[in-house]
Image (cartoon, rainbow, N blue to C red; front, side):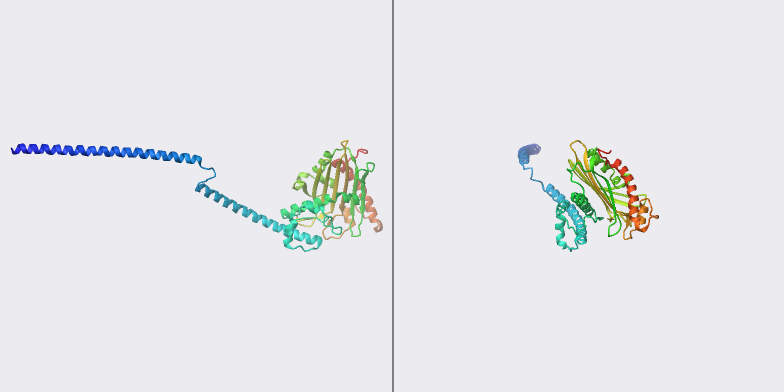
Length: 380
């Protein structure tokens, strides 16, 4: 009996255990199904949210930047401001130097002390505006030329010198007795003069006014290619061109007789007229030392004629050769020009100098006519 009860009890216990296992597995499956359903629902919700975000990003305004983009833009702006600040500071230093140069120039030319606060206003006046004003006849500022080393002052100096000469073109020709442009029957050719001013030294003046068989373009090109030939100087232009700007050239050369040429050439052209102005720069801050030089000025004025030829007038003015602060000697001047006055009586020394030099210059001008195209239609 006992054994049967034990067997029965064991069977009941196993059945109860199996039932508990079935319930546990049943609950586990229900839990997993519920968890899977929850995950699927979460997936659906997340996909819906993602789709909403994607659609929202497509509708977002293009000017709305992220914080990263905004920070980068601000950094770039700051760096650019630093660069511009350095550039402006450098520009300020340049203009401060230009102001000092202009202050000294104004005081040297007119003897007027200019307050520092007024100088920015002077700088704002372009050379074109300044040249439109009447020149002081008692002030020789437009004849006294200096180029400073400071690039801004140097550029302004070139503009001032060439534009002042150009501005005075018609007046200078009138002062030297040139006929008007409509006087077709007046021919001034190789008119040379040598004078001895009371201030000392000697002055050479050459006038020309005639009709040339060359066109305006040919005549202008000849001057551009070899403007030093107009000064009776023959050199390689490539070796002498030192500075070139929009309408100016600065050419420098030492001649065989140790004369220093520092020539500024300016060109002012219109469709039917072209004017060249040339000037010896006597004081150049970029050139050191004391040189033998001449005070030189030259105007070339070319007009186009309906028949294809050109009407030309030229005026060349040059002083004796000198070294700054040295005394003038007519005998030394003759030696620099290739002849001597040893046999000339003191009373006739100037007349003999003039006669011998005019003969030599006439031969040189023959060569100049060929090089620069100063050839008349009537006499070759």
